[in-house]
Length: 359
Image 1 (cartoon, rainbow, N blue to C red):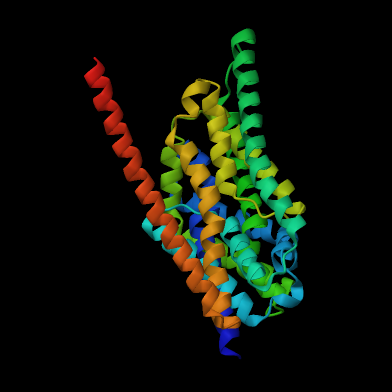
Image 2 (cartoon, rainbow, N blue to C red):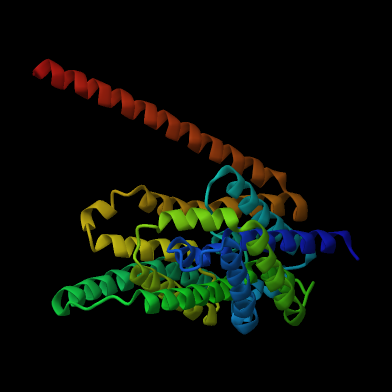
């Protein structure tokens, strides 16, 4: 077997394993945090099982998009597939290690776009469609949970309805598993798409194989992510959890059937923010999580795009001139930003002194 093929498959397997550990495991976070599922092992097992079902049920839609819907199918050969997977998987692995949360879907799309820019071949309409849905779907999650929570609290107050914790617990378990299925449908394709596009692996072989790898990643190394997500949602009620998980699962599954790779973490987070907004609308926009979401949306695709573009230029096209210009531009931008911050601080100090003198 060609060494590049081995590298591409190995990178895809590592990427899939990391997807399971960081993304799919989070799908049961609400149910685990609410203590509906008390055992961490069972929660991770359910997340993994859901990922397998989702991938086998509808993972081929997003796989087709990532394999041939962003750049020309003829463009994705073995070296290009290896670059995309190494960049996407490596970027996600490094940023997870240093604590910067990135979206697997956005990292993968960014890497493919970086290759396309290098060859000046992109399906721009498809890319704009994907990017627009990266904004629309999280916003829809926010509006749905906000509206449902407003209606729910109004009915509880008006009709003095009694909460049935037993039924809510069952519903939360089911909707959590539903969210895990959605994660499998959307996320497994990130690792498999480039392999299918390069004809390294068929869809029939790849989907079950990578579904199992994602499930293993979730079960063996997803505990930390599960615990972190559980701590974030401990203040939510069972009813809140049902609304969040069902909304996230529904929107991501719809997107998956249309072949759109969606940043699931952002959808879940904006759904949680929608619940919080019903209590204090103004305070939501001051939360650091909002700034973090925006930062992740911007940095995820850009980081992988730049790295994939640079590697394609150097390894495939053997053009070092463009990469040098790119690196110099990035360095100059950082220097200018740093200088701008220093100037702003000086202006602020000068303004304060003038105010104090006037007083």
